[in-house]
Structure formats: structure tokens, C-alpha cells
Image (cartoon, rainbow, N blue to C red):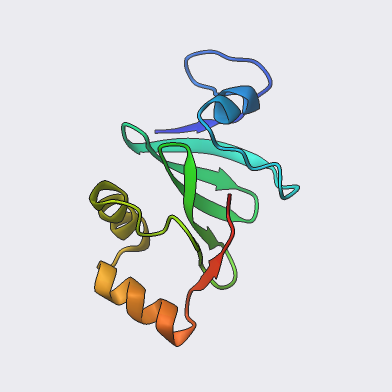
Length: 113
């Protein structure tokens, strides 16, 4: 279920303050966030106007813009087996495929946090 970001809070919405409390500190960019989809406990897709983030335990791991080159966090993209499992689901590929795309330049390593 995708919950829209809203100023108030009820069973169907999640405020920006709630996202921040989850550790999703995305104030580096001026982006508008539209909602959160839980993949599993502590594993979320966060939807923005420009694309979607994969967030694991409050840390941005990957970003897929609607248009453009996907980005992975330079430090955390392969942090743990659990992170890798859900990153692979998010990207639709294996870790070996992700590593090959990083090497080829198809993915950008960036500071997402």
C-alpha cells in the first residue's frame, strides 16, 4: 500500500515528520515526497516527484529517477545481506548484475545520505 505524504496524520497518511523520524533525512535536495511503500519492516520505497528511493533502516541505499541514471549510495549500497536482498528486489536484479552495472557506469555511486 502506498501512503501519501500529508500535513496531517491518519491511518492512510504519513507526514514528513514521520518520514524524518524513520531516519529518511532527505533535506539535502529540494524534493517533494509523495508516499511510502513498506517492502518489509525497516525496508521502504519512498516516492518523490523525480523518482523512488529504496530506504533500509532509515538509510537511503538506492535512487531510481523516473528519467535518468540510477544511483546507489557509495558507502551503504551493499551493507548487509538483508539490505542486498531488498535492494535486489527494488532493482530487479542480482548483486552480481548490480556490481557489473556499477563497473560499466550504468549506475552511479553517490552520497545519498
